[in-house]
Length: 115
Image (cartoon, rainbow, N blue to C red; front, side, top):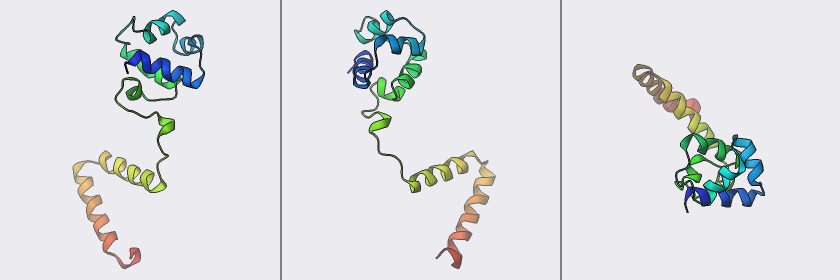
């Protein structure tokens, strides 16, 4: 599907009118219809993010890069959230601090308290 078709499909699935979507992103409804009908083939990238937010999906979904909306994806588990936080924190460190952190993690993993 093209971006315009995905916008229309998502909008109608949510029961959102073109007027409501247009108001949410600050354009007139004819612009929404022009996106959806392919009159405007390349929806401006600056418009994709606000449209996605209004339609409760990701910009990647509207661009056809993802096949699922956020609502269709399973919620991440607590373990997944923890792993993501650990990786984000680790990657925010300098290379020297990453080496220190890795060394400390190895120490903790080897201690008898964690076994």
